[in-house]
Image 1 (cartoon, rainbow, N blue to C red):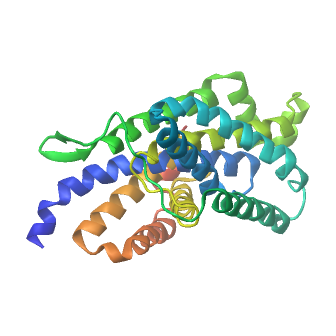
Image 2 (image 1 turned 30 degrees about the vertical axis):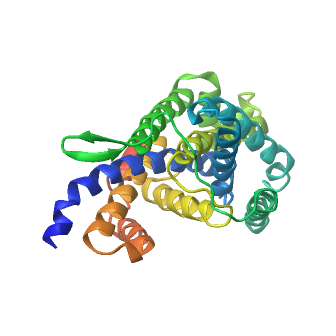
Image 3 (image 1 turned 90 degrees about the vertical axis):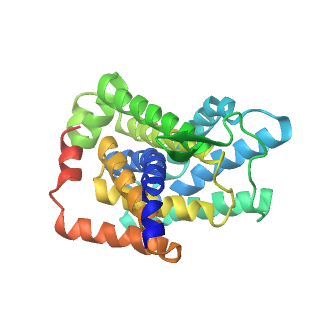
Amino acid sequence: MLSSLSLLPQAVVTGILMGLIYGLVAAGLAIIWGVVDIVNFAHGEYMLIAMFTTVLVSNTFGVDPLLMLPVNVVLLFVIGYLSYTVVISRVINGPIFAQVLATFALLLILRYGMLAAFGSQTRTLDSFVFDGRVELLGVAVSLPQLVAAVFCVAGVGVLYYVLKHTKTGRAIRATAQDREAARVLGINDDRIFALTWGIGIAAVAVAGTLAATFYPTQAETTPEIWTIIAFAAVALGGLGGVLAAVAGGLIIGLVENMSVTLISSQYRSFYIFAVLLIGLIYSREGILNWVSTHE
């Protein structure tokens, strides 16, 4: 137990870094869920596209992963936009069961399409300009995780600015609050939904590009893990709120890493969902919902 306690500062730092990455993934899911009002079960699969693109291009052509950030953001925005216009727009006014099946179909198409294209082997990045570890206040910190966390915070900042201080962002928030009233004001809600889907998936592109620098990429298992964590963070933080989703991601990251250090690494998923369940039961009007309503 004493040896585990000595590792607690390391677990806290790692939990915060991972939580910030989880937060950006969750923020992308939150705005789609909160604005379009559809649960995107394929969220992790979109992230997998960014991870595969980063690993394959970097390993094949020697391109640094950071240079893949703008490429993946544009690529995933387009894919997200097209996913809405080609698939989701056709079921958005249908029964919820059809909506669930549509995003689940996207999950299967994306996952097994990449599995067929790239195989089932686990892929890792060969090199990264920010490789290795750095010591901060006596705690060894993974440099790729630190860089990923910093860029994810920047991504959250950009996302928040777009939603709060741009014409498109105001239209997105108006459509989320009252779809009929937004139509009266001349807002094309179908176009706004497509843009929201694209923006939410572009946020995942940032996290996926940077996660590929330290997290193994595997077509079957990788998207499941990230989707589950994003759902947990969003449910804990609240729908539609970017900052609340980040807060949820931070809690998930801290609980995950501290529990693994102090208890056992065998029950990683149990810790996440135990805290989620407790939070939903006892803190439904607590700090995370406050953040969500004050963004």
